[in-house]
Length: 176
Image (cartoon, rainbow, N blue to C red; front, side, top):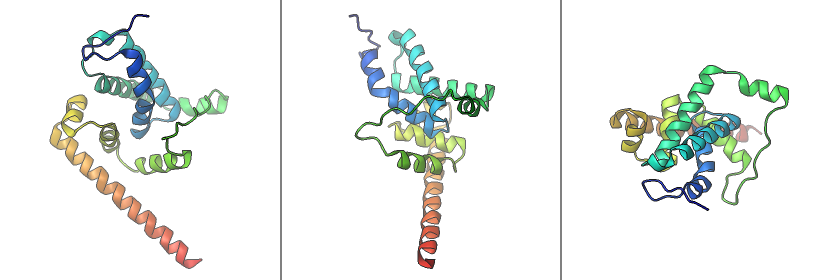
């Protein structure tokens, strides 16, 4: 069996196995539904395979490609996921791994993320996947200071939302 190696020496098969689920998580962080994330991640990985030997930074490349696919798809057909569910075409959930968050925890995090603007979700998603602000700036075409500002604002907003949620839970807990 012939292994396709990129400029960084990585084998595509190993890269795919180690990063595909993480890529889906990245897309979920920036606002994609599970179906949209799986579709965009698959499309990005197919493109990566086609030009693997020319990709210097595969982690960044597949994220940028998947994000672009997601944004084009979302702009082209905003209600496709709802139509898929109504039509019974939605694919079932994959089994989580041993280190995966529970479905409940995943939904809580995604609910929190939905309170952020797109740029804040984007920088949180890249940061979660291990990219530095300067790397995120290079990938997204933003200025590094803007990325750091969006990251700081996202963290402050998430902290505020969590504090408000806890205060509400405490208030209801005391009334019972």
